[in-house]
Amino acid sequence: MSPEDLNNAGPDNEERAAEARLTAFLQDAGVGARRFSHPPLFRVEDSRAFRDSLPELKEGAHTKNLFLKDKKGALWLVVCLEHRRIHIPDLSRALGAGRFSFGSAELLQEVLGVRPGAVSPLALINDIDARRVRLALDAQMMQAEVLNFHPLHNHATVAISNEDMLKFFAACGHEPTMVDFDALEALAAARDTQPKP
Image (cartoon, rainbow, N blue to C red; front, side, top):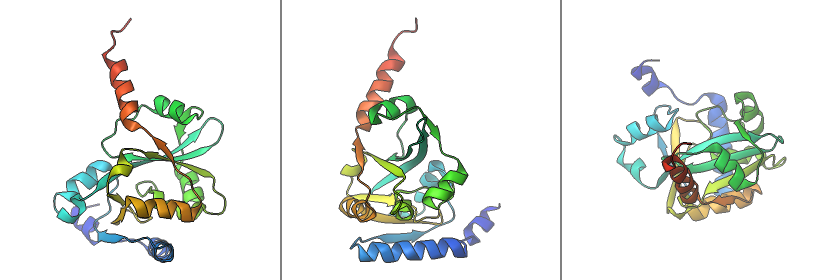
C-alpha cells in the first residue's frame, strides 16, 4: 500500500460501528476521551514516526499491547509502556501464569473483536459477559496522567486519563493486575550482565 493509499484509508463500516458502540459506552460510563484520526498504524515504530507530525499525540503514555495465552489456556491482555523490553518468561512468572505464547489472530478476533495492529485495552468492551481475558498493566505506565490507545481499529488514537481508564475497566468488569515492569527490566538487565558459564 502506498503512502497516499494509507492517508486515504479509513476504518471500514464494521470498525466504525464498533467505535461508535465504544464511544457510547465510554460516555455512559462517564469516561472522557479525545480522539485523533491518522493513517493506520500497525506497530510501535509506525506510531512513533507519526507522532512527530502530530504534536497533540506526544502527550501522555503510549503503549504496547500483547494478547497472550498461557499453557493452561488462560488468556491475558498485557498493556505496558511502548519502550518496554519484555522477557516473556519473567512476565509469566510475575503473573503466576503458565508459559506464554502469543494468541492467534483468529482467537484475538473471537475474544476481543479486533485485528492484529489494533489490540487495545478498550477491546475489553467485547469481553464484558464472558470475561475470558485477564488484564495486566504496567504499574509505571499507570502513573502517567494520560494514556493513548486505539479505539478498536488502528486509524485513530484516543487519549484517556488514567483515572478514567480505571473507571472503564471497572465498567467492563475487569480487575487489572498491576505489574512492576521496572523490576522486570532490572531483572532481565542483571541476568544479561552475568558472565556466561
